[in-house]
Length: 476
Image (cartoon, rainbow, N blue to C red; front, side, top):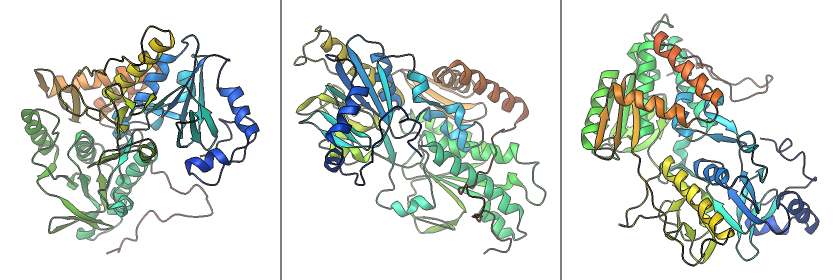
C-alpha cells in the first residue's frame, strides 16, 4: 500500500525506520511536526480529537463529531477504507465484490469540513505530551479515541495461519475465495478419487456466526452454483466440516436457535462436529483430536484477540483488550478512550460487553456525545455517566431461506429471520449505491443461483513471475 495519494497535500517527510512509539516521535524533526500541526490540528483554540481506527466504533464517533463547532477531528487508519465486516464472508464466497462492502473513509467523511483523514500506522501514544505517534509524525490531541478492532487468535499456533486464513480484511476474503475456487479447479484436473476427495473437503474451524455463515455458503455454492460447471468432477460431492470445540454452535443465541442452526446446516450438507478441538493444521489437512482429516482448504473462525496496539495503551486482559473505566476511558487518562473490540468493559452486572458491531457503534457515539458535552461546558469531566449498551438483538444467516435472529424475548428462525437479516444488512450499508447494487446482486443470485464474483486473483501482480496455483494432476 502506497502513501503517495493520501499525503499529496502534506510536506515531504522521511518515515521512521523503527515502529517503536518513542522512536517515531524522536525521528521526526520539529519542523515536520509543526507542519503537520498546521495542516491537521484545525483552527487555533479548537478542541483536537484524534480517532484511531476507521471501523464501526471509530466511524460512529467521527460522524457524530462531524461539523461540531470548535472541534477538529483527525481520523487515522492504516487502510483507506471503511469495511462492513458482517458481509465480508460474501466476498470470500464470491457473492459480492469488495467494493460492495467497503467504501473510502475520505469519501464517507468528506461532507464534514472539520474532519481530516490520515492514512498511517499508529505506533503508540504519548500521554504526557498528548500526542498520537504514527509513521506520519506525531498528532496532538485533547481527546483520543482508540478503535483499532481485533484480529484472529490462533491460541499460540500462529504458524497455522499459512494453512487456515481468518476473515477480517478484504485481502483475507479474496484469499479465501481464491483457495476455495482453486480447490474445485484442482479437483477437476485429477482422476485420483482420493486426491479429488481431499480437494473437495473443506474444514471451517469455529462455530460462531462467521464460521456458520462460511460453512453454509460453501455447501450451498457447491450444491447449486458450481454443480453444472465441471465435467470430470461432481462439485456437489464436496464435504464441508464445521468444527466447534464447545457443546453447541452460536453460543450467543438461545439453545433452541443453536439446535435449529445445526439442523439447517445438515440440510445444506454440512457436518457439524461438537466438542472436538483442532490440535494441528497442516498443508494436507487438520488434526481433530486424534483423527487426521485430509483437506486442502481450511478456514479459521475460532478466536480473536485485540489489536497489538492495546498493550501500549495500558493494562490489558488475557486477549489483549484494554481495561477501561465505566466511561470507556483508560484509567488515569480521562481524555483517552478505547471503544469496540479493543475495550475490556463491563455492564452494571459485571458482564463483559460482547464483541459486536452494535456495541462498537454505540460506544463510539457515546464517547463523541461525552466530548461534545464537555467541550460545550454542559458536562463535568469528573462526573461522567457510565456507558449503557442497548441490546437490539443479534442475527446470523445460515443459507438460502435459513437464518436465526434473537431480540429480547423474541426468537426467529427460517424464512422470516432470513428476510429480516437481508433487510437489516442492506440498511446498514454505506450509501445508496451500495444498498441498491447489493440488493440487485442478491435478487439475481436468488433467482438464478449464480455468483458473479467467482474470480481467482493471483497473489503476485508481476507477469514475469508466474505463480504456481494449479497443482499437478498426479500430486499426492
